[in-house]
Length: 232
Image 1 (cartoon, rainbow, N blue to C red):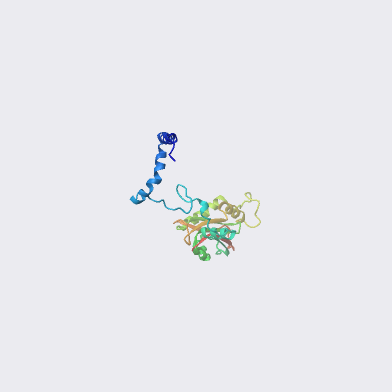
Image 2 (image 1 turned 135 degrees about the vertical axis):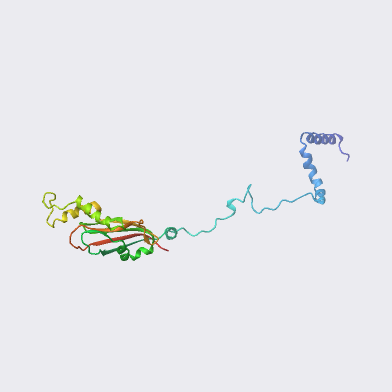
């Protein structure tokens, strides 16, 4: 049956009209016809097959399940904190001081002898406290003994004995007792010395003094407290 000329002309007109206004359709229509030729010439490249959808830089997080982790328990937190912080230690000891007469006495070596545990500390503090009210502890000159003698005489001038009975009310324990209380308050009952690498970190000319303010030989006791980080 012969093809209708009017229908043919109409189809040709529509094709020309569409290609004139939509030229990209011309390439789409020709692509299936040219595809075999492109395969033969080797100009066609296949895109790699993707197992999962990707974004611009990486697979989405939903494609990969989070790794299984053990619960963060309080015991693990305590263990971690223990590993990060150095171990702090305390020790305390009571001992008697050498019985001395009235005066200022250097006792640094005696203190070190009584506290050998000082050597086990990397860094720390040594606190010495004398348990009496008529003597004192101090840090001062460790070389010239004249300094200790001058200090005792200077304190005697600051708190003299009351031989006339018009300076102090308290006199029941002897003329030297009330001045000893005054001197003890002026100087102090304790000292604190840093510990560095197992030794007292005193200055070159510093030493620990024990100051006895009573005339007779007395029995004096000290409380030594050490706090610090032990050597590894």
